Structures are given as C-alpha cells and as structure tokens.
Length: 471
Image (cartoon, rainbow, N blue to C red; front, side, top):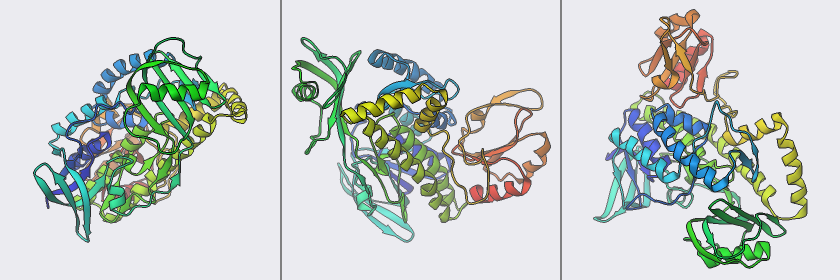
C-alpha cells in the first residue's frame, strides 16, 4: 500500500489529523486539490477545546503569539471583547479556558509546519475523482499534473470540506435543513453616508470598525466567488431601504446557514471529519473547533487500529462520540439563525434572550453551549463525571515539588495516567503507550490521547478503561 491512511484535504482539519496519525506511528498521506494554500480568511478563531488540543501537542506558544495579533484585529473590526449569541454581544470571556483569535490561513500555516516537522507528506494539485473500497483497503483515483494515479491505503478520510467529493463518492447521506439566511460581509470602504448598523424589517446591517456586512433571507441561486461592491450595495439597500455607494470590498465572504450532518462518519474504510461531515452557520465561530476536535478524536483511534493495538470496532466510537457534538452545534446555530431572522416577533424574542444573558447562570450556559466544554462523551462502561469530559491543561506537582503542566506529558500523542500517592501501585497496569505520572496535588485520572478523561478512580475500572482505549 502507498500509505496507511490517505487524508483528502490539506486544510486545518486534514493537517491536524495527519499529524495525529504520524504521532501514532503510522504512515499518513495528504492529498489536496489546490496547488497552493488558500489565503481566504474563512474563520478567525478556534474555541477552547481546539486551543487545548493543539496545546497538548506543544503548539501553545505559537497559538499565543498568533492570538495577540488576532485579538488586535478582532478589536479593530468589532470593538467589543464580548462574545455573542446570534449577534447579542453579552457573553463574558472565560479567562481560565480562553479561545484563540487566529485567522484560518495562519492556523493552516502553523499546522502545516507541525505536520511537516513530523514527516507528513502533502501532495498538492491532487484531485480525488473516484474511490474503490475493498475488504482490506481503499484506493483513491486521483487526477494530478502528471496524469491519473491510483493511491492505495488501509483507510481514507475525507477532510475536504462541505463541498468536498469524498462524502458523495463514498455514499454518505447528508440530511439537514436548507438555508434560512444569507450573509455578505468583508472589509468595506464606503463613499458618502452609511445607514446606522442594526436590525431592520428585512434583515440586519452590520457596520463596525473596518467590517461591514448584511444578513437577509436566503435567495435562490446564491453565486460563488468574491462579493462585488455593487452586489453588497444592493443587499444593503434591500435591508435598510437606503442608497449606499460601496467602492471596495476586501477579504469578502458569503455564506448561508444551511445545516447538514452526515448520517454516519464511517462507511467501511472511508471516514469523514470536519466540514465534510457537517456544515452549519458560522454563528459563534464553532466550525474549526468542531473539525479539529473530530481530528483529535479520530487520529489516535485510527492509528491504534492500524497498529493492531485495538480492534476495528473502536472506530465506531468516533461517530458515537463526535456525532452528538456535531448535532449540538447544528442545534445551537439553527437557534441563532432563528434569532437573526427579520421580523417583530423575533425582535421581541431577542429582547428576552438579551435580558436572560444578564443573569450570570444564563450567561455561562450560552458560553458553554458555544464552547462545548460541558459536553460529555458516553463510554461503553459505567462512569461518572469527570469521565467523558475534556480535561483542561493543569499543573502537576511530583514528590520532589517539581511542577510540570499536563500538556508537557502529551506532546507525543500517548495517554497519560496521573496517579496520586494512594494509587501509585496502579502504574504497573500502564501499557507501553501510556505514561504514568506520579503527582501530589490532584486525584488520579487517565487521559486519552485526545484529552478526554477515561478513568477517575477504582482499580477494576482502570483495567476496563485501559483495555477499552489502549488494548
């Protein structure tokens, strides 16, 4: 075979997944239809859990540096440090588990460098046109500048976006809801007067700092490509009723809020991750976070199956865990679209939701809804919280008082068994891909390679968790 796993798509999700597979000791190969990385600024940040996932692989300093520049851009364009739900800017930042402001092209460069350092090959200008599945592998038929090639592997993962071909080629269903709203936005230069930002009977006009945009009811035949000045001016006129002159639109983007999710994330030896598995409104900036967490969840499992450490059936846990996470994002983005739709009934509902956000408990609810930090995976064995939750990074103190971070022990993509003084004897149970770390400042727990707590007390339960996730 040409590789253990072919990853279709060299965006952030595909690159991170390939790096995870390489850390797991198998041979990934990335193929990408674009000849060069995209400079399109589709997203401007990653959430709490994605930030922590990349920090576990030693990328924390690079993220922090990029965040400083991204935060300046965010303040310039929006002027408010508060997060939002359906453009109701009242969500308080969580200083303990912050998200990262980073433009998607910069994140892609960071992950490309990370993958390259691990020796991940990336072949550009390679377009997958067909997939042939067999009992023991899969073959991708690829158009390249040198002609058609056949690339064989044990598994293939589609990370080629919402409009990618892998999903349809492999026969995945993609049910969901059509667009309710469409948005045109970008860095805009006007000549002459500009109407006030706000909600209007036919939509919403956004204008703050260098950014401007308009949201209205979806229209038939949404075009592709950059937003032309005349197109944006016409949309603003439809919404506000006022004439405007738009002289320039830079870094434009257009999107709708259609919400769809694959009916499964695995068909035999073909899997999906990121936007290939789910599309939704960008409200709340959740897309990259969701996709990177897909990659974190799938990477170590797929590597363990290829190595022979775990049975192929463990791959079914990928959709069992990540499917509900995707459905939760579709649910809250649909709710945000409902609150963004024009009309006096929605205006009244927005006022009530805005008042609820002034309550600390409700504010935290909406923040956790967008971050996903409270979402708990269901495991095939009985367990209570914190088992099934993603662990934040934390300080660990050993018997000599030396302090490390949990993320210092996760860079190689292995599991971590943290043991307090009462449970030191359990270190003998740790298999070869689990590091036992004695500590004095926290209770014992087992961390999967994706940062999820798999065990938190009891010798018999630890044996079950190790057998389930590490073989």
